[in-house]
Image (tube, rainbow, N blue to C red; front, side, top):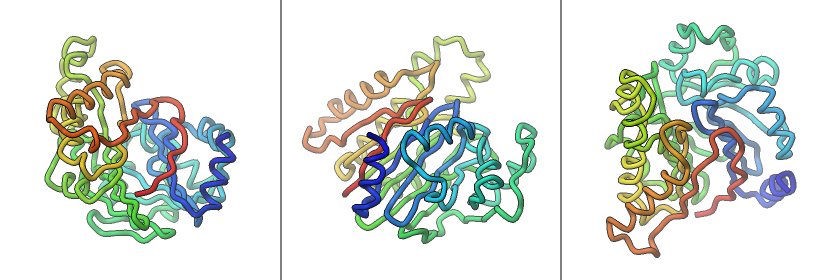
Length: 280
């Protein structure tokens, strides 16, 4: 049962995460240890978020903060409600806050008192975790990934990423777990129904990461990765199976020993994927 597992992890002092949804309909990741929990992004509607928390035995009192990646609505939809109704502090870069303030889609602006500024490449010590935001290319006002360290567990969280950079690679190099965007299949995008300007935007250096690009990244780092989760999989230009098949084919194509394969899991777009208990 989800609730029993949630309580078990907390009681044992472990570190777990739950993906509540990952895609253009809404993104939200819940990370938990024995001291509390935090969210990365809050792009799911607040009613649905409350429903998921109830199903998984998560108390709002256990959540201590929300960290945002960027200012697009599918990543911040519930941030205002979490700040004002549940008194949760919201953390983001100055660039993300500027983007939120000028975004006409966001009618309810997060109160200044609940805003906290983080700076890229400066670590934040939080409930036993160390979180370091870093630059990720995307067509938002600003966008960050997060490197999360807790004891021997090190996670690189990279989503809405138009292209790989040396900086992103340097954080993945230090990780033993990876959450990475695998947004689109190149053939499906090219032959699909989207208008050309949107196709161009998605495939640009500031758009989204393809299955092929995600696969090449995973192959470069697979020897030190225990788990890889594929996130932000498109509903129209990809399928979870295509994303997974591309990674597995890439590992074979690069002649990587099966003993070095990480566990690969595509994350659900519009529903929780379930708790993952993390260890080195």
